[in-house]
Length: 174
Image: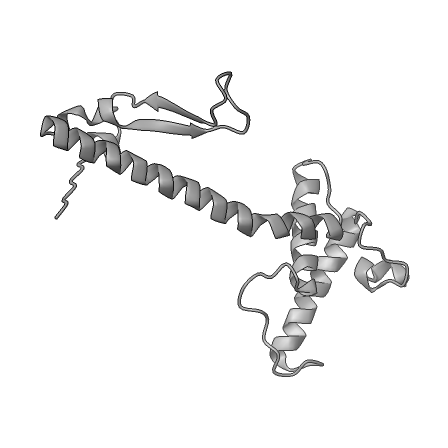
């Protein structure tokens, strides 16, 4: 019957349609079957699945959309996404990760500069790291003063924390 056909295989399918739970299961099953056929030699003999995720790969996007929507249905997460919406979201993930990594790397370098300056001025960075280094919060909206970065002082080490009580910072500059 046509009720057992995945949504993307129907003649009336549009990428902006939201799939029901049953349609997500059909779509996910269809993806698994397509991958199994392609790796065992069915209609696409010798074709291997892509080694990494690509938002422009229709199979990958069908799989991700169906799986994420099923998760959304299970945990009542709104909104349920269409294939079109999921592809738009997937297209923003890589640039967002690259931007976040660049921001974090820059903040780490700034903290290293604070440690070096402290060592040069006071001769011993080990005893005043808490005063020199800061947690830096990256804010979505600016503060009243127009800043996107909000530094705060480091808390005292927790004596019960394995990492805090054993933390050693060694910095060697040649």
